[in-house]
Image 1 (tube, rainbow, N blue to C red):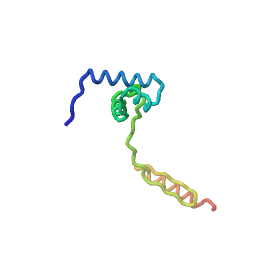
Image 2: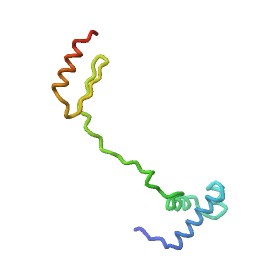
Image 3: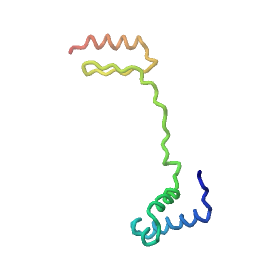
Image 4: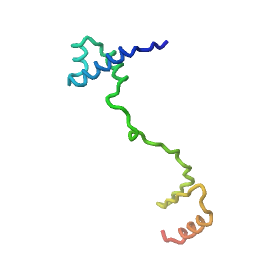
Length: 101
């Protein structure tokens, strides 16, 4: 079962994480010199990101719309939306038939 952590313990670890960041030392050396296991250090480091996320760091995803129909033949590509006009397609195909290959 999950145990809650006291505010004092969180503050102490936050201070340790900041001390390591500001020391410029590699994590392994800092941990060895300060009597901290590497596993504990990385666990607590994840609890305190180096900088808070900002709204601008999120990307809004839009659901992809239905692409309709794609026709490819002899180097000709026709992309039709789901609500394409059939008479326009017939005219396009008729014009394509008249073109010399």
